[in-house]
Amino acid sequence: MPRRTATMLASTLVLIALLCAGVLIKVPYSEMSPGPTVNTLGEARGEPVLQISGRKTYPASGHLNMTTVRVTGADYRMNIFEAVYGWLAHDSVVVPHDTLYPDGKTEEESTQENAEEFSQSQESAKVAALKELDIPVSTQVVVSTVVKGSPSEGKLHAGDVIKAVDGTVVKEPDDVAKLVTEHRPGEDVTFTIVPAADAAAAEKAGREPEGSEKITIKTVKAPPAEGDGEEGGKDRAIVGIRAGTDHTFPFEIDIKLADVGGPSAGLMFSLGIIDKLTPGDLTGGKFVAGTGTIDDAGTVGPIGGITMKLVGARDAGARYFLTPDDNCTSAAADTPDGLTLVRVKTIEDATKSLEQIKAGKTAGLPSCSTG
Image (cartoon, rainbow, N blue to C red; front, side, top):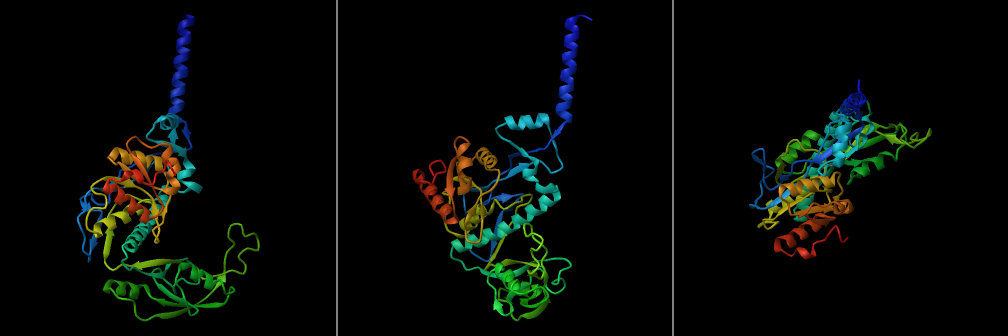
């Protein structure tokens, strides 16, 4: 066989081998890319995203878009070609698989966790919006979960309102744990509660729940926590519940949005609620997108995938992007052309910035690039 032919054949075989390896060899990476954006003032799948009843609402134009990120599934493994393409592409990011699915978390577990975070973010968005509008919201401490096999199983139930522990009124979920751990394991602790069914009936009727029950539970020793060492937890008493908060709103607010998870839409939901409950347009008809978690006090928190959300927002037509303060540095480092970043720390920051955008006074907007 002529040397030139042999060389070409060998090169072809090597190339085929490399192509096969690139396709067949899997690498421990996942991909993030821009997901869809949804206008919280508009509709999704034929119905309004924000549905408010029992209170006067006002038409709102413009956009207050929440943004999302697409990720590859927990069971999907990229091959070498896909990883290299993702690294080179501007509209995607390749990250270690464990970044998205830590500790071997399955896709089902991640989906469930995201759904719970999304539900909690909706509650906080409602609370933050109504507080910003000085509309009273009643808050109560409730049993969030009951640990199976714990002393509380069968005695306390998720949704029970905790009024007091050992006669001391509780105002925050942390108060419950603090009062329980004042006991030693084996001692009794008395909960004053309103059963979940009675609390739900009272909320539906728009009144405060009446009456209460006292439930006595014997504490047990807490299992060692990470970092406690061999002696950790031996004197710490628990009853096997997790306390949380529940809110009673003066009117009904429903957020209808499927196939979205995580807490990062909280800020934009809050702003959408405010816009619908106040006359005029919060945006002045402008296209504003954004992201950020929100807590009951209206504090905006950081999120993941900020660069992908910027790309998705600009592709959808956004001109301004409300950016959590802690995400500003990374966002400013790779901002799509034509998109103005607006730094926000609280929901009040966001509403003030929207007023400036509406009035066309954008030169004074708090910027990520200038600090």
